[in-house]
Image (cartoon, rainbow, N blue to C red; front, side, top):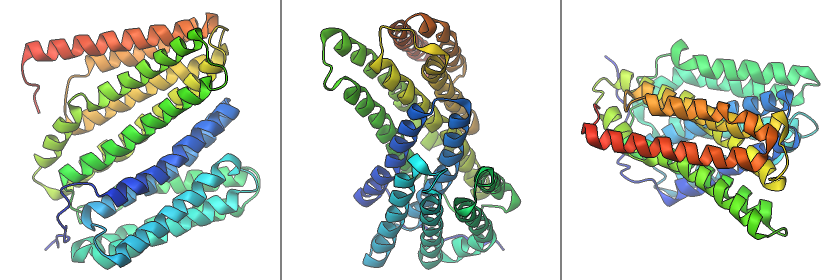
Length: 375
């Protein structure tokens, strides 16, 4: 008979978990800065690779605190050790494919060991049983990241890509039903990391005009803020509550766990990638708002918007919430805005902010007119 893990009461996300998220989101800041400095296809692929393996371990910690609340000194100490590992990863990001690769790999390996140790110590018999299957896969991926950090040249990319492939496949290579999902905590935890990541994009907007303040630049910054607000609106305008109800409404623990992996693991990776791309695009537009952006910068801005809404569609599809049509239109608008950026950066930013805000407003009005959405 399948043993259920002991899941401790965790109605609210603790302040220590929020502190943990602030350290994690520093990696998002670093990835954005890295991409802005190397806005090329190879640069984007490297950022995607780093974000993938980092997000997998963040997700692991979200599952951890969902089952093992940091309520005693030992658990808090181990969680702080995990934070230290994430900090090491973050500071290594700018030169992760150079001399800092070993720091990235070592920090990642430490994060993995702390995660497994905490789950084994406090997760209960069901989680321990599940970890016996998933633990070796996590260890294999962490070992590949560590080995890749020590390897030269293109072998680092190969090792880290293999680690990411193991991570993506692991929920299907070994069933994850041993982990119980507490919907309220799980949804709130992921919502907090999204809002903090969006906050980092606002910081990038503000820093872009510091020392160069003028009425025109302030107007451009407000447009960037409006676009960031639209992403907040899209994510937090009711879908977070519907997601919680959708997760809670899945009675089978295995199906609920798999829906959580797909919706909050795979789909949220796409959402965060969109935020990184968008923050990069806004950052470069703020620097040169009245010039043509060039294809790479225009694609970062418009493509970031499109990727975010594609991730949102993936998320909503995984949990069977909401209607897809307006979000599909938002993604299409993001791509359609790219030619505007080739003419004038601020025109692309203004068109994006206005079109996405309009589509979301019409979606909200339509939803209210149609009554409650099906869960």
